[in-house]
Image (cartoon, rainbow, N blue to C red; front, side, top):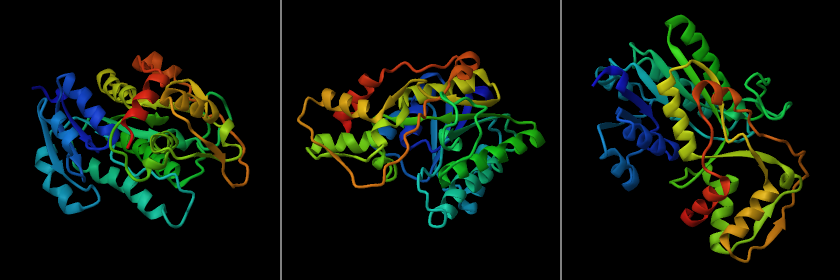
Amino acid sequence: MSQDKKILVTGGCGQLGVFVVNRLVEEGYELVVLDKSLPNSDTHVIFQKGKVKFYPCDLLHEDEVRNLSRELNQIQCAIHLASMVDGSVDVLGSAVASIKLNVLATINLLSLVPHLRHFVYASSMMVYGYPQLTPLPERHPTEPTNIYGVAKLAAEKYLHVYALQQKVKTTVLRLSSLYGPGQYSEGNRNRVIPLFSRKIRNGEPLTIFPGDEEEIRDYLHLNDAARAFVLAVQKSEGGVFNIGSGRGISIRDLVETMVHLSKREVRCQMGDRRPSKPANYTLDITKAKNVLGFESRIPIQHGLKEEIQASA
């Protein structure tokens, strides 16, 4: 198999990683998958579908990284999903861990692939900070308001310099709020959709905080997000791209839709917190449509129904 059909994927056992790996296998790619977590029953099945080599590896451990240098020496295309998702505003408590896992791990990874030609990086809409334009275009100012956004933006800036010096094409995908079935990490379990799905299933009240009900978010199903990564590989176009549904939904409408789909009696209550100023976090995906041929295909009603049924 030619080298351009062999791809390195980090974080391949994660919630998004499983979908990306599955898509790439279906497209006939040969994969080398790195993750510090071992495959569970779901990922094991996917890994058996095609030519997938899995290696347990923590990119922050230099000895584990060095042990893979021979295997990855000829890799020419890499998708970097491994990350630490942390929406904390604690600039002291979570800063070191977030910078290490989102920036230092990226640097360590690039040291493994000396013949790299194309690097696809999973970034986040959190690099934008508070929306000043709606929908948010790629040219929007990058003024993150949490450590995760800072770390992702720092990695983007590093990749920009790396690409210039090493003549490597880099594709940055700034992802909107992802949702869908799978094993959530502890941080992701507290996001709105998985949190409300569990509460609905368990018959618990949904807590909505003042101001949040008017907040608008752009939710993208994991299957659609995975397709964006495949398109990024196939098109091999460098640059920064927003990847979302391009359609926003308020928290109020999201809750009403989830309650309707669940066909259950659900009680909502207002939380005790200082009212926040609602914002519209809908992404402008025009560039991704025109250059990558990407647009979301899974309606949120369908995805939410699947989520409610699958949540635990």
